[in-house]
Image 1 (tube, rainbow, N blue to C red):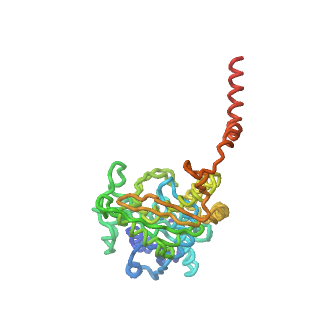
Image 2: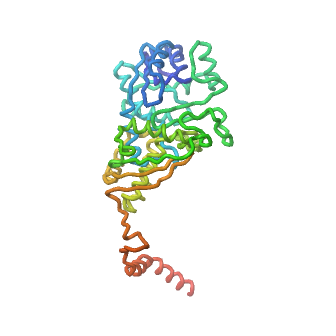
Image 3: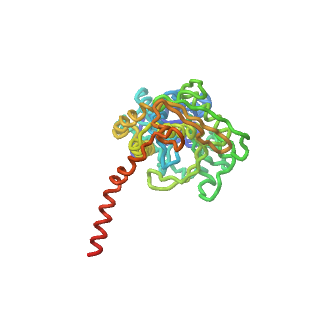
Length: 405
């Protein structure tokens, strides 16, 4: 606590950490506190959150509806990039952080605040995302991270602190989960899930039904894309927010989109993470399938490498850095022919592709078929194979000659 600040804008969700932060900042910094809450589709009662912030000591509380901006400026670029961290995590929390941090800085500038505060832990990824973004957008702004400073070393300590001050909190000692939800998915951690061998408890899931108790039978849907962005379901045009909400409900009903993984955090440790991503699972699946038929082999393979780089950029909190901007050129070009439809069948705990088509498809049935109508010239294969294997033939011949000598 080296610096003193007069006015602090605090990222506020109304969860345990941020509920405790408002009084703690006032008590320990003597600063006026303004809270900022961005609606990313987390489903909270934002009016109640605003009222709670004011009740716990904030002098002002700002709330924004960021759902459309979140979809257009962050989710769709990530979909076009096929950004999935370590092959599983569709980055819903990681994608929301740069937008929230950007708005946090803007609100601080609006109110003449000299610092911002976040509720990220010292061992988590989100501290990186908030602070790198803030310093990128305004290097003069101060940053306060109470969870790295305060005496409340456990979540149980925070619960006691809140109870002593009469602050309503959304968790109890018996259910100490940390939950972060937005339109693109939900992250659940802490509690008994810190044991890698323990199955996530049934009451931890929010967006998906247990597949073993999901609806029987299956549902088939057709997702239409325009230049890499999903725009319609079953011939019904939908805006981004409505489309994602629809797929979250549908896939969640069948228990599709549950992810349980151990991932590598930015700070160097491994963490067990439990995620729910019903819509993201279907959209990424369909998008990749469309790329399989619309992109040539070298471009498809190179795009996969770019996708990992792009996912790492998001995960590592470097959204506003120059590398992502540079990669956008390649990604946008690769998506110009990503127009078409993908059919998906959804059943209990499972989603599978059953059809795909595009006016830009590179699939030629005449070349691919082994039946009547085959247009492939088999005679050309012999010359191709001689040239294709020439370097290996030469290598083998030289090695045998050297071995004989």
